Length: 263
Image (cartoon, rainbow, N blue to C red; front, side):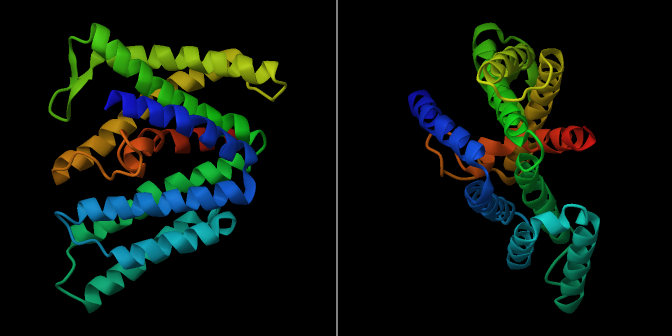
């Protein structure tokens, strides 16, 4: 399993970097497809316990993706209209959908549709290539470092009920490892002539991203544990589905988007 996981990462990483570097329509199409697959995985999983309004949710995500630049500054209006539509459906079909069903439906649109889409918006911002790469270097650097630090030093459980294999030592190692990888990334980008943020700030932001990455992973684990499943999907060999591979960035993206917007 570990060999398959490593091989998938070795093959996938340069492809991901190339797509992020190219940006534009290619990133938009690939990103949009991943968002829709992730949403499908989410609604399939939560459908084990709840009864989400999948068709309306998926259509809403498609509309949001198609009008991404328009909805960027009108997100509250978009979510408000979507919620109104869900409540109207609840009234017209009562008692088919419960309030919990409405909640998990709305959560999917925000958790996957909106947050994933922020990656596309960040890429289109000034120096977007650097920031999007920093997101993934921090998240995957934290994940890799936490795994090996936990294997070597792990003694104290981080979240014994939620994720029994994660340890406090692994979490700390993940943050330190992410900081080191972010420093290397910043140096390489500078050497290649690309714009970079200052080294100190890059490492600080990267370490915060590493913490958010681990919280994002635990958040996804809480959903899977509640639904009684191991993985959201099986698209990536050794890694699971789209949400299994990208769950660690979901709390990072809004943080980085806020920083870049403020610069």
